[in-house]
Image (tube, rainbow, N blue to C red):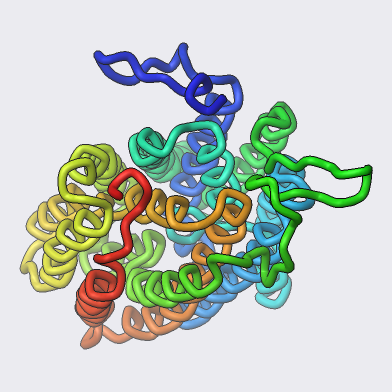
Length: 431
């Protein structure tokens, strides 16, 4: 039973009490987010040293996200039927494929092909099918009342891993350059390291048990039942009962992600490099601190949500962080810009575990992978459209501030729309 798979001591988190599947899913989250942070700090710099202009880098990152979108949509909408474990292994293989192609060529069109068919995160955040399938799997293994808390810890370890990855990627590339490596070669080492982590992920995913899958019962060896015990309904993109709800959420999440795409971590690193001349090691340190603070903010979301609700937590913590984001480019010095950015990150991620938990709560159990996948894909589509614009802005000194201003303004619109559309729809634990 789910209640037996996950327990917390009254004193707090007890890792040794978790089921093996939950430990594996947390471990893969840590490894994957480390890899994303490891690569994201140097990815745009690597592409620049391959000879790509800022506009070409923005275009390539856009196609990276678009490719992840198409692959993720297919994998996540089929995962509940074809097997969650199997689809996670496929995702790991696509990480390895992308790293291999990115490290092997400087041809823009081959890089574009790698961006489309592989899985690479230019933002340091989740891309690909992993998050959606892991969320659905965790929701099977825990109770409704523990779901938000589990997702908060899940996001906390991910943020810490991203932070450590960013610090390691920036620091390693800087170290390699001090001992004689060219910048290009030092960045290529990071790309290859990303691929190695993809191989380790495949090994971890292969050890998941059938408990992470959707429970099905066969009648007379032919008919399949849903988790509710009723004949499996006809689906569209893996959804049946929750289609309208999921598509409404997906539309709003896409707007939020489009806004966030203006300031993804790779391009923000490039912005700090262009505006203030910040070196890779310093960039790694900046985003190490930012992601540590983001993880802490995600953990506190469970406590806040238990008192004011998931939707209220998503909105009322997100609004001030967006105002702070808009103020970052207006700071006259590097130190002030960093301070404001870190303050912003200290509250910016409280909407993430609550958003994930809310999505899992308001759909049927056997729609969870599809729901998480569709909303995740909507976010990826939104995020994929804006980096190309940021590349144009960064290439023009007069427009350097625009990515932050546009991002913050659109995110505020998203917060207000989310509140007025969903404040009356409660998850089971709030009903």
